[in-house]
Length: 315
Length: 316
Picture (tube, each protein chain N blue to C red):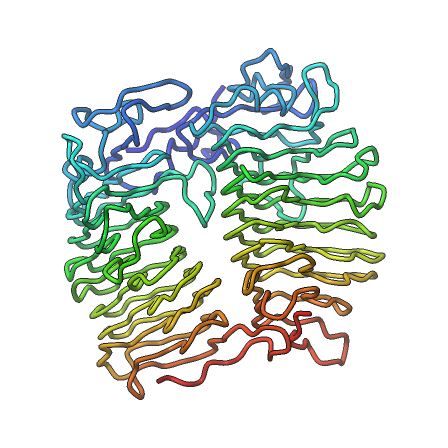
């Protein structure tokens, strides 16, 4: 359970849960309440003063569907085994919440907790249901040359990722590098209030292929330069809601901010209240007729323009 | 003392953190739950029963990137050193959160209960470190604070996050050098959210984003009561990937000449503005050359039986 502080609040941004809370430190030596402690994967992790060393170890300790929470203390966490070997985080225990500690409300553009993997591999593989991930900055490592930052399988139904960022700008551009990528037909996946920082020809920052009854909302896709082919790929998703997102092109071009390549479901994608930068080539592209439903999506304009142009065409 | 109240609710609204909380009193004594406690910069500040006297002292005690929080108890805090000499607050320790104590429901963003000023011609706060969060504070300028920004932030202030604060310059002598939050360097990922700015004459901009990158201004209210305000927000050279959205620019009985001024802007597509609402007399975006600012669904105010709001189309 969370630690009740002398101020009456709970130590850590701990959701109300009936499970255990596992604390993870970003370094061997870390500070809590002004005192230094040593983290170790030999600790039980159940108190911030006995934090685990690696996120991976916490996932080995949690129990499925018991309300367990993994709290990542502020700093940069490198996914690794207990021996320190870079390895993806296997988010394979259902019903677990993994969150960063914002120590305040938290800057929505840049959480204080960072998670990365120094290997050519995904930072996180989600392969279980009912997992929640929040307040974490996924920072792509240069060694990650062609993998998604996080992927989620068909088993990852009800995955909820919110208030996170993905930053691939330190990586070598490769279309195999995705932000959050679906590898199977998960249902009820929710991605909201996330920010994606991109600077060249990477893969889609959100790939919802084959998902059903899912939503991507209130996110910002921020391209700095270069050409990004696709920001959000729907694929053959069914009943996918894409709403209130903003696609910024910066000094680059987003060829298809929302791409339906592979879409197969009639009326499968509902797209509403999204905003697209001027350098969006075709805002909603690669859908056949009637696969996408549009309402109130606008393209920015520059001086002398209309002040915002309604998107009406699906190609 | 017990920090849970006898009603079972929580005392204060301290953010969840792994760090220490340093309490600061606005006066020499402070009353908590009916008992009066002395404030002193000799205290450790780690309990509201033994608060520090000055905000400046708290900044000298915090540790970088350890989740430490500086909590300003309700009232008017005056920036000063231990000897009570007016001195700007040096927000120079990375990863610190400084906030006023809001009500349990999060506080009134239009007027926080904790205010902060400086009785000198100097900035109230200088932010010169990364990952600093500032919230629930009313920056209420006083007459002695002439020709100087209320808060400035340097190139080192990456990821500065200011939210639920107000800036009120109406007690100050009108001067265009009086700015609300002023960029002095190329900070990145700066966010201003749910802030309220109150002006009543020809002051400087209330937010300056010059040279910042990947920054965000959203859900703010700019209240201008009278006179002419040249610009509410300025975007200068090298401002890039700034998003300005869902703000309201209220020109009251005066005029906000330009809500977002691009004088000196240099980056094509560097500023994106959406769903902002201007006053009757306000031009949303000016002094951008073609292509530097992108607009989408921004509207001015319509009066009485007029149009009910007209979309802004021009950026220059």
